[in-house]
Length: 73
Image (tube, rainbow, N blue to C red):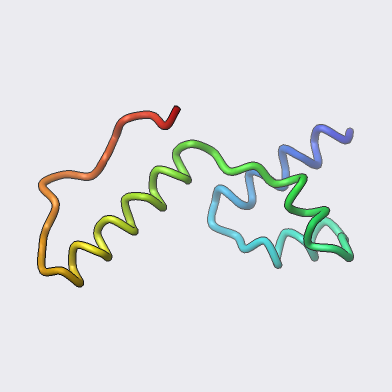
């Protein structure tokens, strides 16, 4: 049952829900507890990296030729 809470928290975080929302759904009083339950997927981290790359590029007036699609190691 405990593993299901980890999976549930991770699914919520990786689908775009905030840590604050997941904290309240799981009934945690401390955000640190929720952080231990929620694990970011590599796809989520890669999407965040691509978003940052596009944001920096637009500020600098540079458009990257493609998004990074290599797996994170």
